Length: 134
Image (cartoon, rainbow, N blue to C red; front, side, top):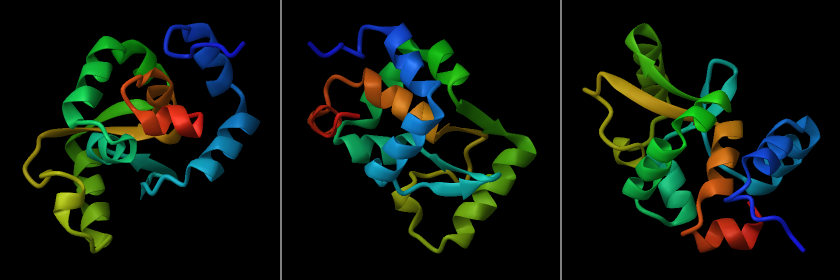
């Protein structure tokens, strides 16, 4: 019988603490992120599109699981780090609509792959998360 990761923080953390599992899942997921500070990060708009849910759904999970997600790589960029991140996005030569309107935002939340996977294990509305086993 498989475990329900949406209800078990311990089971989610066991997966997130396994570097081999993280690497294999990252390869299999094929998430297209933004290179920043030596790792790949994604925005809530990208996650919502990936899981075919609304950004409000992602925001709800962030509100309900803020501590767990922060512990696993979600962070809010402000100040100089946000400025650097905006420069990286400009250098990618993709429409800003792919990332939401970030030009004037004073802060921006980003998920590294570990936080993305953590969120994937929480999202119950996404058929894609359930089908892919994420």
